[in-house]
Length: 321
Image 1 (cartoon, rainbow, N blue to C red):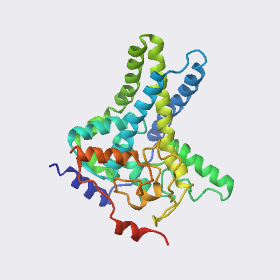
Image 2 (cartoon, rainbow, N blue to C red):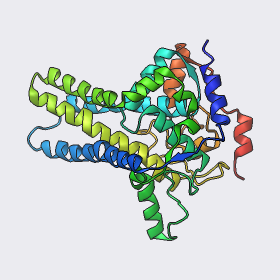
Image 3 (tube, rainbow, N blue to C red):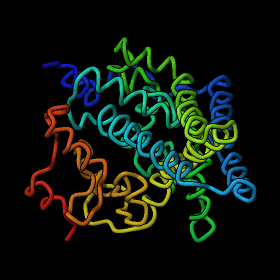
Image 4 (cartoon, rainbow, N blue to C red):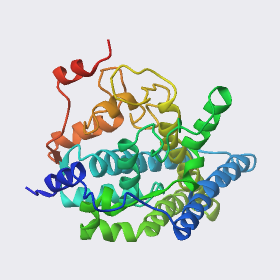
């Protein structure tokens, strides 16, 4: 059995203090803006075009199937892969599964593996404080309704082009040293294109036409990217502003039921910020967590193991009275 995850955990808990935590320069700022335009703005425009095209080409079960199927694959990569596995080491798995999860995660176009992990680990380190890349409650915002709206906007969209880039050598040194993950990381654009090509080809084959290919590209590609994008961003904004706060997590994270299904259970943020390394984010039977349901199945199949879960005693100890 590989000992890679032990190295990951140790590196995450004890990052090298001599390295700078963030990197800020004009090249990085330009890259952030470019990434935002390519992978946030263009999918939004594509969604508008797709909705408008329904007037001429009514949406069919094919487009709906491609949208849901590609959303599910991408969310598996984001939720199980980038988040629970790579960022929090919530379970162990094989090299083949690591590669699959990394590629599916990159298809979400939320950032390459190493960058995504670095940003997320910094978010946990400074959750809802001034150092948090996407906190909805930064110290400089004014109080009141206007301040809250500004905070939500920053957490959902504004931070994408306006945050200090976390130093990967500080926050994800074990991934920087991993040759396989580094190679996947360098081919980030290829995986995004793959996520667009698959529904395009399937749409063309199933419909047997170029129009079908275009519809597949729009609904399974751009619309799917827009949906996944806003699902993930809603965790940063709404799940740190609205909902319940049953645990002492030392921040403003909330459990938000409204986006639990589309986020694969990621919206139970107060649970997650209290038990960061838990593979299960929904801790009660009614807290829908599609991500953990899939991890449970994979564990039964022997594809993942050493799944981390908080004990009942740990859960009771962190509850607010």
